[in-house]
Length: 426
Ligand code: ZN
View (cartoon, rainbow, N blue to C red):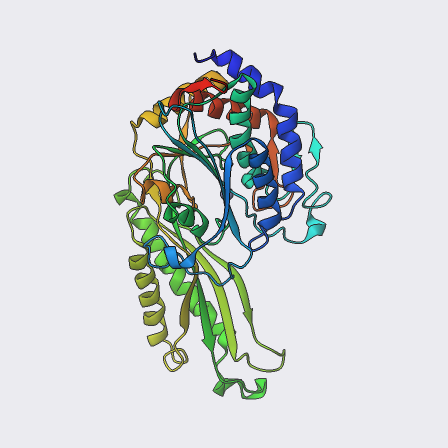
């Protein structure tokens, strides 16, 4: 029999100190792209201790290379693993579920900008600090802790549950895609990204690309005859800004995005070029990120970006003779919309209300999410929903513990209702 909401929430509370300890240990293991293995090992060990059938496997490029959701990558996948831990019930009477999270974190930036070490996992008041605390090691721990709470009551889900911790979310989303290609699917998925206690209704896709320019190096006294690759790059950036404005003007065609002021953001994230202060720079390169609306294919958007750069180059005295090259070197991913009215969303709304005593709110996120792998390519509802965090991708990233406990409670209640429960012992 299903315990009361209060009994389940009390079981989450009883395990919360252990949950925070696990979060601090996870944060203390750096797991930037390409170095996720140590943190993945810790997660896999915890899953095995609980008796879940735990698979550790590399991202198999051959399985996903030709999938429309595949993104090219420049970072090799040696020593990069996904972990999927599976619970099987004695009797499959409920609905199956994937609890997903990503273990990779973004770079810390200069350590001097942080209060203490970026990987301290320091606990202070209601917060745990550190890179990845919010995005999204707290969420990975919440998935595990929600199941632990049921175990504390002598119960387990009455349906198959896959606990997934993927690598490679912050550059491409190929990690979640590789789990799908290996055959893992379910009737719903939850991803506790740091969404400030809200549900993601829709999000944009994201493209990454690099533009490279080259010119003829000359001494500055002959600058009139030399093409300055750095200055020419400004003109390409201006053309990309015009494209960004044109895409934003199309927002009225996209439900949920029409009310957002500036849903499509272009970021010139990195620039390098030139060799010497007194030489006209012969080369320059920029790394860029831009969003696309759901329903727009990555290939169509990429073609439009390439055409924009080619057109700008044709009209440019220097660039016409030395057209820039464009390389797709990361996210090549579409956005998605979580259709309203699914039973999974109704189940979460009920669970959220019980855990928070306030109604579930949804919002539109102008950034990439692995939810697209479930919604677009598996046709299942994916609930991206997670705790209050601050400064994710910034300095002094932190996650709120009171929020994390409530999110964990809502996930535990969701599991009890969606999967049903059965006694651990027959
Ligand atoms: Zn994230």
